[in-house]
Length: 66
Image 1 (cartoon, rainbow, N blue to C red):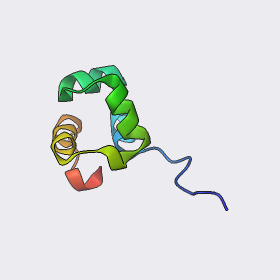
Image 2: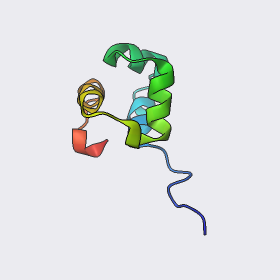
Image 3: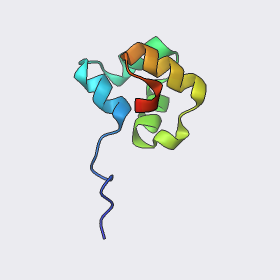
């Protein structure tokens, strides 16, 4: 059985792409590396509360929506 979430984008990636931002640009805004942001987009379980707050502010979305 296939994982239905396998092909779905993370909410962070969706919000970032909606704004036309690169990973490098968003990472510079929130103060992390592009590599770390990539890791989070591919596995949101690696997201800390501190970074979730920073991302929600930068992306203009509710923290619950990440």
